[in-house]
Image (cartoon, rainbow, N blue to C red; front, side, top):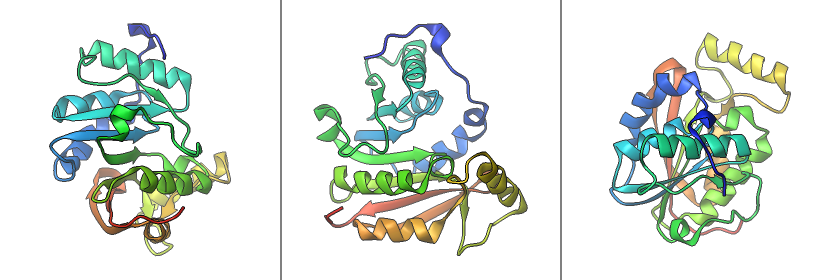
Length: 215
């Protein structure tokens, strides 16, 4: 468990720009009650924002980076959400299986990853999808937010430039093809993809767990 103080809070500027459109989209996707597991929560700014906006759910933030977990806990304390929101879970998306607290696992309704799969190797995307399916109940939702290609093509020049900058930093990174992601999801029972367009050429994508499949 990570102790934290106010000075541990990190600030990611992108979270201020996109928290409202993401929250508006989530308002149509999230259940009234149950647990949401956020993978790679980063600073924790999204997590506390959405916990406050959707008080009926229990938002479990997670990250593989201890400094991010400290920041998440500091944001929880700063926002006076300690009675509503569990402390950060240190979890690597490549872990198999994910070791979730029983209190979260038994009430899990949604797994969400915001701005993750384009700044991680494809193996992380595959593990994320596999383990989301493994842990979600039938009817649970898997949600992704970020930039995507469509049918192998970029949807904007800015996304194409962004994709190249990612690949210059790490050849295993890059804007993912939505159809390739959907194919992986379909192989593990995550079906019925819906998506909404968001500012800055991003999408929020939702799939539903409709079948149990071996991963």
